[in-house]
Length: 259
Length: 202
Image (cartoon, rainbow over all chains, first blue to last red; front, side, top):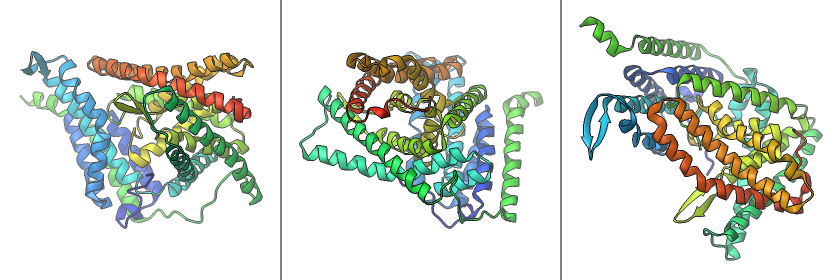
């Protein structure tokens, strides 16, 4: 269930320095978040598609993921075309669909997906333990990366424990429904999971101390920032700046200037 | 419960990011070295719990439990929720990176507020006061999260008003179920492991 679907591969992106990928992704995502013109958002999507292409991920899986996470955006499409004031494009059942509304929803869809694709191709292509060490070498506080790594490490363990309890409940004839009994059963089950986690944490910490832990996990993997990484980061930086410029110039308004 | 990428304007993203950063720094500072494994493993437990679907009528909802996170972790709920949301963004691409701060605030701020409001009730020796306190925390933390999502959307522009209203209304059944489940969980913990209810990270 908790698979890192995109973390393994043999592409240029998978082999790149995780720190370089993380920083370029952050710059690209943060700049894309500020865009508010259709053209700049569409360009951002194209840039992110190039990265997706370079990461050579299973296309069907990426598409499936995109469909899943576009739920919120689809939900907004139900409202924005009707609720945005502006020039009416056409009318269905007395509901006016405005051009401005379509444009707003379009911008959100384009830049939202550009950001999602860049997360998939630049951040999710690093396994999470490696990402933790990359964060650490980028001077993120040790306590935070430790928290991330421990949470990641125990997700599967606790998931398994939770499944065991659910199976036990099923064997005893538990069928979930909309009633207080169901809620009480789930609550007791979860309370048990929490107690087991709490007790496990004590044992884990003692085991860590026994092995000489003092505040940080060390990694044997050394990161190497190569010339390719430099070239990719710089071109990505230029692309992001270009997006900003494109957005600032606001193409439709620029066309008005020429008329 | 999350807002996805590409929707909110820069000012809201930046404000959310700053509040989340402050909360996380305070949470990390109040956490002792030896508490980090405990917060981490509890975060994993909450992550797993939020994958459980509870039936309601013909449909089902997944649990949020941010109220419970507040009661059990205190100030550490900020870093814990941040880590959980980061992992969700990395595993499933739910939420996102630029909205990570906003989403953390949406979940953690009400959790923390209701933790402090209900602390006297939850620490009381009387069974029913504890019950009331834990119901209010569970209910209120989701109510607060729903309100914050709606406010963020409404601040993004007038055209988002109808969507914000629908989201707020959709949260009502979740609030009630969260209140009930938080109440039962706290009652169980009080019987079986009472030391879990008073976090030393406050």
